Amino acid sequence: MNRRDAIKLMAVGAVSIGAIAERSDAQAPSSSTPAPSAPAGPFVLPALGYAFDALEPAIDAATMQVHHDKHHAAYVANLNKAVAGRKELEGWTLEQLLRDLAKVPEDVRGAVRNHGGGHHNHSLFWNSLRKGGSSRPGGALGGAIDGAFGSFDQFQAKFDAAATSVFGSGWAWLVSDARGGVRVLTTPNQDSPLTTGDVPLLGLDVWEHAYYLKYQNRRAEYVTAFRGIVDWDVVTARHAAVAKG
Ligand code: MN
Image (cartoon, rainbow, N blue to C red):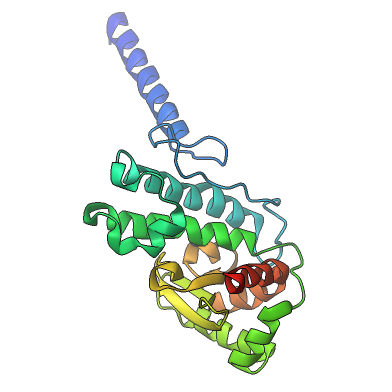
């Protein structure tokens, strides 16, 4: 190899290392800086509101970090891409998009369903959890749960059974109808209960990305651990807002 070839090879090497570094920067979404390739809005990844390790040992810090900063960030970025330049969707809130999914143009409806659902589901999920949880639902929600399931314990058994029964990826939900009546249901993938006219009060993400690092195939252990980190004060307030109309 002569000197000129050697210099050329070094230059090529430098360029490709630079390109890889640049690309991996661009593909690393964080809570504050969206990927430059994606539109910056109108939808924004919400801050978690607590430390990645706040929910230990029920949910480990490594899972929380990748789940929020990578998975949830990707739903937001892809939702922004789906609505970019669509005049007919300008000003629509996330809730409107999911409630009126049938009115979303067909060519982006699937993307809005998956990524809009992903954004809404995860935003609600983070906000329903806190370190150490809180004991039990109060207010009208406590009464609605007793009325629908017999007791809080019977509700928990039903919710856990729903969460462990989801085949593949999806969510278990406690939802409310417009009058405050509650029930448990599951949705596949990132489908939102809003699309079928229900109001999600509490959701449990049972995609493998939500628990696999710590629990591997033991989903039932993750579902049981979830009981200890639910912020029932927030869920109760959510229900009160629905019933108020
Ligand atoms: Mn998830």
